[in-house]
Length: 281
Image (cartoon, rainbow, N blue to C red):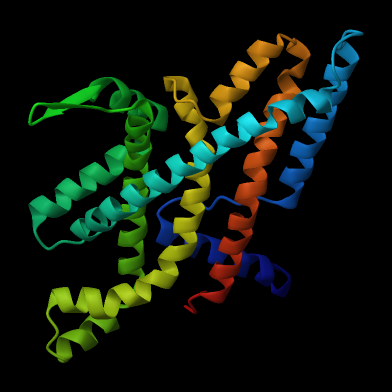
């Protein structure tokens, strides 16, 4: 039916994007920001209603803690940058290993990819925090390993697995005629991958890679559970210092608003890139 064609085409495009990415697509909408802002306003109203006569105003209290929370947010971004960089580099090699012609390499990469993709991020975080040493000795010099370094590695593992699937899906989405044309020109497999297939994959990999980064940025708050002094940890300390239960909703919605303001432009940019680099099937 002609009425169903627009929806069918849209669902087909979404399914193709998810097939290339190897996971579902995650989208932020303006309505999400409105809901967060509304929760912040309601939280401020509740806190103000529960305030005592001598308590400072809610917005004044939040503004006083904002510089400290901003430093924690910058730390969240630093963790996300490092984890994304490490995971992307490792994921590229793991993704190419998944399409290897050597069965041991291919099966080993497949197992590693799906193990880390399906393992809970928090579990991987705890494993890295408690199984990695707190310090190492190199040539008689003791080098401490801070908690944020181990937390970054713990977050880089699932990123590595997801990037591996993005790479595998993008390579396998290239038509086989490209491989056949390269073979007819006497290109070997390595030359075909690096000179013909990979350049075509970049446009297909970029939107899901950005989507993954937005998810990772939101997930950096998990580091607060293992004691890393990022934004969520500092928020908990601010609430403990204020000792006002009514501030709970206002502070946490304020933190969520920060993350939304940072991640929403990334989500919109991802959509624009998908439309710009859409592959006609």
